[in-house]
Image: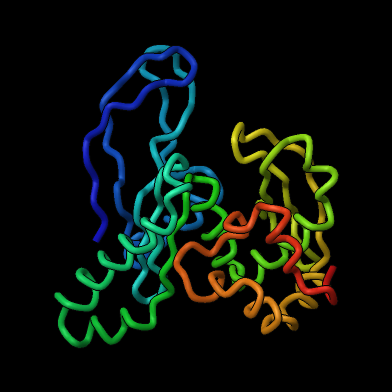
Length: 238
């Protein structure tokens, strides 16, 4: 079920705070528009009572959709370095809330749910965007690994960086490279659908090189942002 709580939020323009209801968890099976609104940026929109500026409430920490077979936990960006710990924590919560406690009918459905964790609202939006278009997020992250390799020299001056999909079209993806530390946009690029399909056809080789993307809850190329890990990218798709 969805859960709200009253929280103090702060306007990024004038610094004024106000109390408002914030969705801590969202049942996407009940609130059908939730995923699309999170992706499109209209979810949680709020006007400052002092200066009138538009900003957003904190993104939900949990998005679950039993009929849609998705269970997605969002942690703060600051927690990213502890992703292994957060994976264990999320697995424990899921087992308790969806496997141990519910009746058999719910438990059977829950076993087929896709479990994921992410960090920050940008990763949450991207996961829901990929789901909207029926894209395998594991293969999208493999695509990002290839891009990290290809654009290594362009990204070097900005330190650790990552790619996000912000647009999906029939012919390909609109993506952006962002520095992990400062969240600075470095450049945008278009990736043809054919490139993605070629990578998807090479899934087993990626699975061998990067097994955590296929077995763990944190499905993100950002697990492998070092040059050493980039060397594992299969030669056939570089």
